[in-house]
Length: 126
Image (cartoon, rainbow, N blue to C red):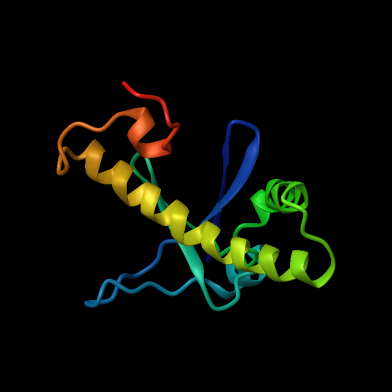
């Protein structure tokens, strides 16, 4: 049975979950359906909370306008534009995941000192 609470003015439903010996949980059907889960979830640590939400299907969609503008500026159009756009869009998520991994290593001091310019490759010499 889910418990209803409020956080500020936002109502929240809370359900206690069991964790298996393999560290697995089952998302309650009501939450699964309500939030639109499919076959994958994103898991994030936010402070002392573990946030699980439906995985975004359209990876790289946040950068679609920038990718298209850049490709058009390079002179691509028609089918060439479409093919180059698809290729560029497939490269967004791996690039972001690599940046996040580097940032995590820097934050935990596993890779020594790293600067903003190192992470975001601004091209400026420090």
